[in-house]
Image (tube, rainbow, N blue to C red; front, side):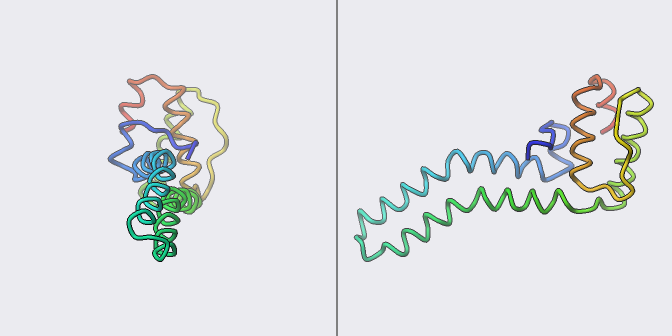
Length: 133
């Protein structure tokens, strides 16, 4: 989650930006929503609904965790051919600009793409990154 650059140019291309934003929002909101849901159900329906109330509370607490799990699995997936070609193109352009980069992987994953994009947005000027997209 920390490796992926949160840039507006990437929002339309990759779902990671939206998932990261939703996960961060979920970590802020879901604990309070879970407690509120359990408290309201117990107040209005009594302790007979305790299992149902706890189930809903646990569901709300699990939503941001599901986002983290999805991001973890996605970061380990090998890039599809079209994105792999784009990764290699960005790598070559950055190398021509004089960026110090690690050797490219033969089978890059989404995590390597995230690190490359983060480097591109942090070290290169806006005019260059505008042409990447």
